[in-house]
Each structure stands twice: as structure tokens, then as C-alpha cells.
Image (cartoon, rainbow, N blue to C red; front, top):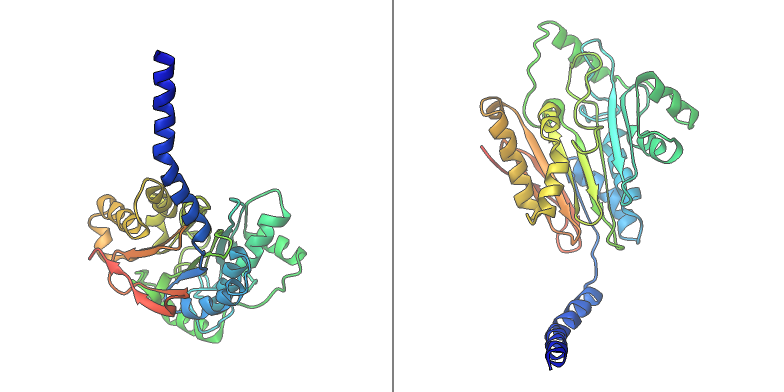
Length: 322
């Protein structure tokens, strides 16, 4: 009798879940995943265009973010990324970059000189070496061995601005695009896979050898293909302190939306640096596995670009703590 009753209850329980199971199965099969790419700042619009060419044709998110990041890297008018980037205090342009795919493969370079596209070197590190991070002369040597050309990165405009700075040598980073801003770009492809990249020339007139968050996986960039991806921009030292992008993704894992996760990460910086946070900029972008995105910053003025079927390629200003 007891066994019969237990069997009856088990069958009843299974029966009660059957419609729900069918519902989930139906939804999973019927939802069409739409590609989306998001990136930091105004130059994200042009970056998104290149990324979208790949995503819209069924291409891989990894290829899309690399192609997108290369756009501002190769633009001499952009003084915070790649060619034309502002130099360090000694007049040397040094570049930092990282990339991460859906399988948690990673590659990064830092203090790389003479190479226009560090994001592509970072990908080569990921795919062609047993390492994940190369720096300085070693990174340059590797890049040259992979066929990258050695070029002069300091443009006449950037050199002129540097020489003007030398007259006072006052080191005071300015919030938003003018001084120290990165392109971070994350994408979701039609196969529902995520990837991301981040690249920068770092803070203008930084100390020789300074590295911020941009090439550090977990700080400026993190991808978890089960949950989502995040990237950051702004004062890298403060992002490193909280391992910012990893924090955003982990908050998403715990149930926060991309928007909520970005807000909580910024609030963590404010809690850690209540005085300094009022005078600097840090912003986060996040993209979930289902294509939902969010953004938040310390100060007003942080813009980000979204390319998705429902919005086209559009620029937004993120909400801010202050």
C-alpha cells in the first residue's frame, strides 16, 4: 500500500511538471537569437558597423569584436586608442589590449609599441602561444614574428599636444573621452555565443610602463558564455581594484540584470573611493546571454553604441551615479 501510494505521488508530480517542461522546450526552440553588439563611446558607432557586417552574415562574435576594435585603433584622429594615441611622459605611444572568446580562451598584450592593431596581436597570443599575456619588447618581437608591420604611432598632432603638456607637466586626467578612454566591445552572435575585446593607448602622459585595466581579463573585460559579457572604460586603476568586469558578470550570474549589475559595480567603486570617485570617470557595459544589455557610469557623459535589429546602430548616454 505504501509503495503504491508513493508511486502514485511520483506520477502525479511528474504529470504536474509535464506541461511546464513542454512550455520551456517550446520556448527554447521558438526563440530566435538576434545578434547584438555594444561598445563604448562615440567611436563605438563606427566600430559596430564593422562588427555588424560579420554578425549579420552569421559570423562569429570573436571575429566581430576584433573587426570592431580595429576601427578606432587605425584612426589617427582618435587620441585614446591605437594609431595617434596620446603618448606617455617620454613621448612613447604604448598600447594595451585583450580579447576573450566563448570558450574562455584569452589573449592580451601590454606596453606594446609600433603596432597599430594590438587587439589582433592579442588574438594571436591567444591562438598561437601557450601563454595568455605578452608585454613590452617580448610582445613586439612576437607581433613582428606574426607578420605585423612596425610603424610610427606618434602622429604630428599627438606629438604637438605632448610637447605642449611638457611645459607644465601637470598630470590630471580629465573625465570622459579627452584623456584616458578605451574601446570595449562585446557581442552576441546568431549561435548565441559571446565574445569581447578591449583596446587602448592608456592615460595620456602616463608614467613609462603604466598599465591600466584594458589588457587585464576580469578587469576591463570578461566573458562567460553561460551568463554574459562585460567591459569597462575610464580610470583603469579603480576598475582593477574591484576586478570590475568579472564582478559585473558574477552579479548577473546571481540574478541581476545587466543594468543592475553595472550599477552595483559602480556603487562598489563609490564605496571604496567616496572622495576620489567624485572627480573621475568609470563606466561599465554588460550584455547577457539572451541579448539584454545595460550601462552605468560614475559621471554623466559616458556614451555607448548599440547595434541590434530592433534599434539599428544607435548611440546612448548611460545613466550615472553622480
